[in-house]
Length: 550
Image 1: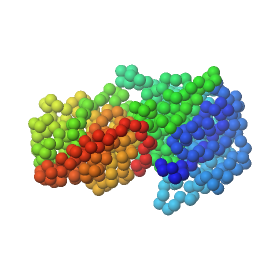
Image 2 (image 1 turned 135 degrees about the vertical axis):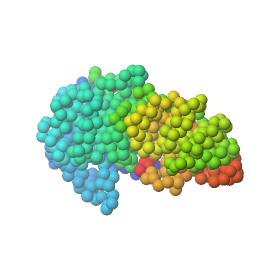
Image 3 (image 1 turned 90 degrees about the vertical axis):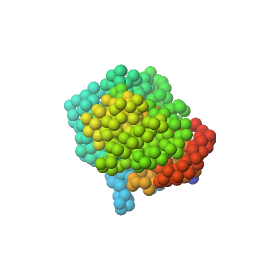
């Protein structure tokens, strides 16, 4: 973000924690880590320390109203995050101000983009002590706040209490959690994350050597189990506040709900790893700006997103065959077996057959392409038609490459998913990704490579995504657990050189190869030199936060 651009503003309407661990103190640290300006609005004052809450003193309605009115005159927010509210009057005040601020939404603009509302339903302290919510407060949450929420972030106990479920305990069956999220959506929340960091891990050690913190994500763009390695620490004070404030800050920066949650999950993981003791009980988590710099630079790991209601395949032991890019780092994408021959004859050793039609020629096109690449010891990825390619490649020694878009991945039937996973040892799986949640899902599927795109604006096909640019491409490379290939809008050697400078394993060229053998032979040397030139200037440093893509 340029220095002259004021940071977006968020309001946190929450409680003051006298121990400095949770509430507005944790919210401030999270906002600073993401580079947004936080206005701390005191809704309640607590008398607490690291061992529990002794008393809660909600501020009177006029005091809360005066704080909000003063801010509205000078510091209107892009997002509001609520924490401990404590009274029905406070909930009513938040609902009124949300409606008032959203009333300024221009025609055709989503009110949640005008003002996001993130609800952290603080109903009690994890360390124990005084209660924060009575039946009237719970009813007000259901009637007034949940229907206005952009994202609500309860843990399993809080979700059960909000839904008036009898199973209000931390050992709620994990299989029930997706239904809890759907019911909260039915009340009116647009996005729901039911966090599981304080719940027992249900993953078997054989599938996941490290215990996992498992959340359920339910948003308009994505749903599934979002997982990250559990941090072994007793210093967890402020975890929920940090997560919800991270979501609010990312929404204020322009990210959609699913991407905001991925960033918040990373922020919280990093904050837990940086926690420290303060007092005799659980110490505070410490959010900091380095959380998204990449694991090589002490940042948090990318979380993994599962498919449907399954845990991520990679946590279940499914890993597809490893991918090794050719030294020249070029990935040619063509639409016919004849063009595969042209690419191989010109020296390409990594190609994709992208043939969208399924016609009488398909089997011949696939067989010819497979034979051509096998003879030249070139790697071939088949786009879309993976079942047919798998049948033709049954006796081959080298792994078969298949590439799927995320819509194709989501449309796979359970038998198709089982077939893919059954042959994972002899399949290289490439998956497209255009957003943080798609990157998290591709990683969770155990993909062999992940495509990041479009790097530059492209007219090859219609898509809602903004260009990733070189900053996001660097972020993908820094966080992906497998090799990344750059794709989209890379037409000239200059485009390829700048993409290669970001560190991907390969750079995809589509239209730049031309449409004939002679055009491909003429174009290829300049692209090869561009990759070498880009790699020569590669610098492996910390990466900034990714920019929004929708």
